[in-house]
Image (spheres, one colour):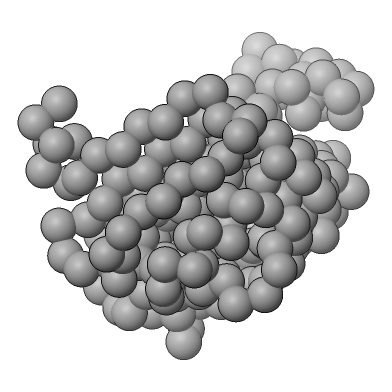
Length: 219
């Protein structure tokens, strides 16, 4: 009976199989590739991927890297990556390449969190000139380094939590590059983030949340 059920699932069209895989954790969706030849390529066409670090797994960064290398969908609408403290540092795991792939595949929603113990990591310039990006969340060991004219014409939601800025101009340039920004969330870390003053001048803004790390913990 179990084999018959598997065969019936395999007979479903790819579009329906993709809808099923979107409802399970990405690591489980990727694992279906070993079930049969039919399943080998199905997960590779997912337009949403969410990689959330398993505590204690040092191989997680390698898993994310290999999964993105094998991903074949023409569009990657949503990408979530959370790397924990056990993951290898940036000289072993190329997170910039992951972001670049998402940008090149028309990402609309990007949520990137680096909790590793290394130095803050800058992301590729292409992220800050991404026409398709609607929602951007950057957290923890990420360096906001923008020394060029950015352009985010579609960005309506921006959250920056516990990140470090190269300078105040980097934040100012990022905000000025977003003409349709509606919601902004800034959470400052307890340690120095290189900001003395924070100026928000965004005419389109409807909602601003500004917290320090201590204030967020109290909530």
